[in-house]
Length: 160
Image 1 (cartoon, rainbow, N blue to C red):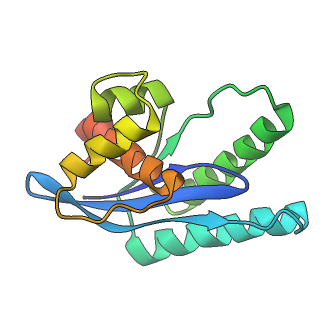
Image 2: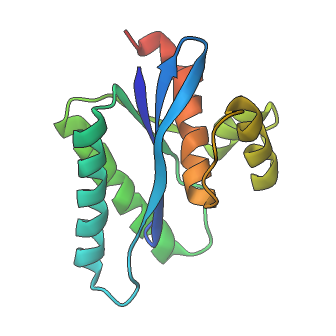
Image 3: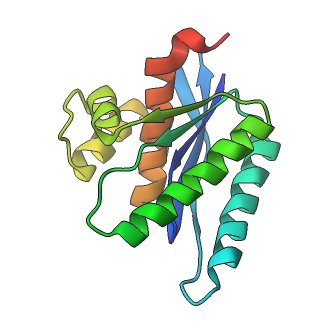
């Protein structure tokens, strides 16, 4: 079982590919795609789409999981992140991969047992879960790992 988790963002999108191995998981890759603010809007979307498409082609995940957009005061940011989510969901559907969405509350509750956990608490729990792995320093990549874990635990009944 391979799961691609994504923490969607327009400036920076976090991603992580986890593989189930017995009772645990291996982090196959985790990182982020960062676009340049000086680039035209369409070019930034293209860069993100191409990056996610390459991850799907290279790792052939059994499922894609995306963090649901948390309400934000900046409507422009919310719209752009929603557009990125649309691209991700399109790419998953085009590859015939089921796509799941989880709220930040569901992710924190699943990983930490506490829905209002902060980023440090999430990172600390990931360190316990992935004892021998070096976690990425980037919060977006760590959030994507948490999204992947949530997909396994909350949607695993759908996996064959």
